[in-house]
Amino acid sequence: MQVNLLYRPSQSLAQCWLQNGESVVAESGAMVGMSTNVQMQTQSGGFMKGLKRLFGGESFFRNTFTAQGGQGEVLFATPLCGDMAVLEAGHKQWCIQNSAYVASSPSVDVKTKTGGFKGMFSGAGLFLLETQGMGQVVIGTFGALEQVQVDGSMVIDTGHLAAWESTLTYKVGKSGSGWIASFLSGEGLVCHFEGQGTVYLQSRNAAEYGSTIGALLPPREQ
Image 1 (cartoon, rainbow, N blue to C red):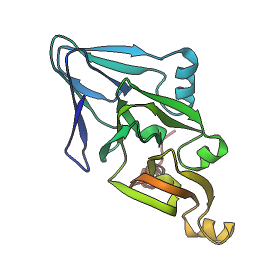
Image 2 (image 1 turned 90 degrees about the vertical axis):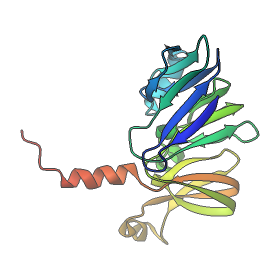
Image 3 (image 1 turned 90 degrees about the horizontal axis):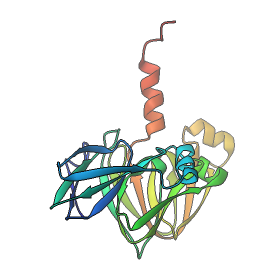
Image 4 (image 1 turned 60 degrees about the horizontal axis):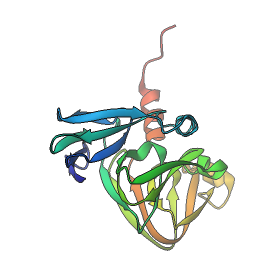
C-alpha cells in the first residue's frame, strides 16, 4: 500500500493506492471516495471486539477495502480539520488515542486495550488502541501534528496526545505544584512520560474547542 498525504497540514486527505488484491482496513465513516474497482466489506471482527471498540469511542464496525482487477484508490479523511501521519508498525509498536485512528494495513492488528483510570485521565479515554504486527497505520488529528522525541522524561497535556511508542511508560498527574494550583492554571491533568521514544502531539484540543464554541452558541429554544 502506498499512502500519499495531501493538503497538509490543515485539510489533510490520505490517498491510498492499492495493488490488485491488496486491502486496507479503515474506521467506519473515514472513506471519502474510492475507484470503482475497489470492493468494501464491513466486519466487526467479532461481537466482543466490536463492543469494546464501541465503548472505546470508535465504531462497532470497521471497513476493509480491496482492489480487484487492477490498481485501486481509496481516499480517507477525519471529521475535524487537521494533519495526518503514517506510522510504521513492526520494529516499533504504537499506542493511539482512539479518535486518532484512521486506517491501517490488514497485517497490523489494531487492538482496543483497556487503559483503566490512567487511560481515561490521559486523554485517550478509558480505552486506547495498541498496534501489533507489521505494516502501516494512518492517524489523523485535530490541528497540526508535532513529532517529539522523548529521551528521559517529558510532560505533555493530556488533551494534545495523539500517539506514542508503546515502549514509553507514563503516569497521569497534576500540572502544577498542587491540585489547587493545577486547577487554577487551567491546565488540569498531564502525562509524565518516561523512557525513550516518539510521541505525536496535536496542536488543538478537541474538548477545549467544543467547550469554547459551545459557550458562543445561542441558548437552545425549548
